[in-house]
Length: 79
Image (tube, rainbow, N blue to C red; front, side, top):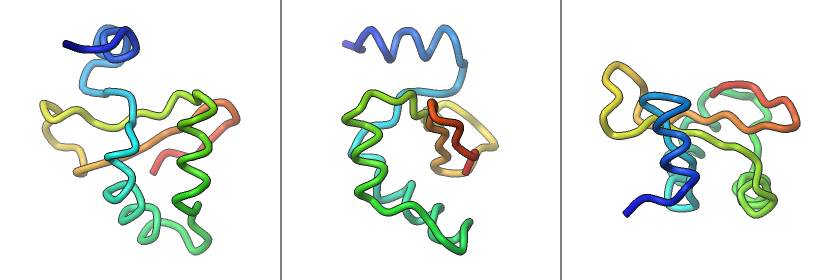
């Protein structure tokens, strides 16, 4: 059964779902390759706890990297 946030994500952003702490390892792998000064795992955890909208591709999204993220607010770059 999906949460309300996951249901909203599926309707509002086809192919995306809310990021979970279980996604952190994959997100960090991309973050470290993508940026010279990457966010730390603690920053992502703090954003999750604070309730920021952070999205990753769902398993059904073809053509996306294994994981990507976007946090808002505040404005956050797409990784």
